[in-house]
Amino acid sequence: MSGLSVYGLQGRVAVVTGAARGIGATISRHLAALGATVVLADRNATVEETARELGSPASALVFDVTDSKAVDAAAKQVLDKHGRVDILVANAGIAYEKSAVDHTDEDWRRVMAVNLDGVFYTARAFAPAMIAKKTGAMVLISSIAGVKAVRPELHVGYDVAKAGVAHMARILAIEWAPFGIRVNAVGPGYVDTELLAEVGRTQPEVMKIWIEDMPIGRLLRQEEIAGTVGFLVSDAATGVNGHLLMTDGGYSVS
Ligand SMILES: NC(=O)c1ccc[n+]([C@@H]2O[C@H](COP(=O)([O-])OP(=O)(O)OC[C@H]3O[C@@H](n4cnc5c(N)ncnc54)[C@H](O)[C@@H]3O)[C@@H](O)[C@H]2O)c1
Figure 1 (tube, helix red, strand yellow):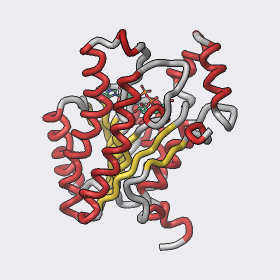
Figure 2 (cartoon, helix red, strand yellow):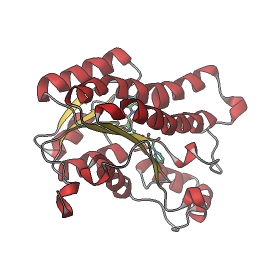
Figure 3 (tube, protein in one colour):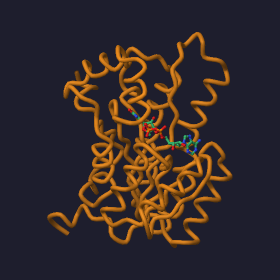
Figure 4 (cartoon, helix red, strand yellow):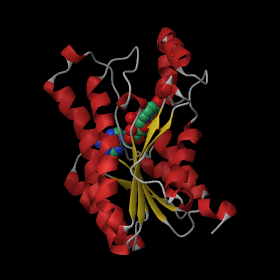
């Protein structure tokens, strides 16, 4: 394959978690545009509407990534229906703001459960189908918060979980390389999502700091994160494995 065709995903089955809205929905749209049959997964049933908007052959699955039995059952459902899984994007995550001393045990467990355990459960559940076919590509969504102390917001649990996600990609990449599976992580900077737009409306001083810290002088567009993911899961990136690809406009190196 050469030229543009290395970026195409025709004939591949892709699962994207946290796909009901935001970055996950945009990644799903992008993978579908590249030709993949996308299964949009989310704990929120609105994911069914997001999948309908993409049209056939996209479909939806409702499950919570913190429930490992539900994740295993979802993997079986995808395999029963499609007979294969080629791409997994572990994107589901939660964000919050709290100082370290205010973290309750529950706050800590909750963010680890979704942002770290959930990513592992998902990768573990979908790997056997890829191992069986000796091919597959996974992308785990990390963050600038996993490589650098961001400001001014405080969320130590989120930051540690996102650092763990990047390291998980390295470890799984080495463990599964003999089976033809590539595992990479993507580290978005501040992305223009509904959540951040709300911060811009309610705390303009925070948004001002974020923009100041972004070398490109603006938030990332969701499509820019989707573009990185599309590249990493394509045949254009068959040599990229165990890598954390920052998509942050230069934030992490400034
Ligand atoms: N928005 C940013 O600026 C930014 C920056 C860096 C990293 N990220 C990461 O990108 C990912 C997507 O972020 P977003 O801004 O689109 O968030 P979002 O809140 O808009 O979307 C997250 C989606 O994940 C789903 N989800 C949450 N917990 C779940 C669970 N337990 N099981 C299944 N689904 C669950 C939600 O229902 C939602 O649809 C997250 O992992 C986030 O940490 C975002």
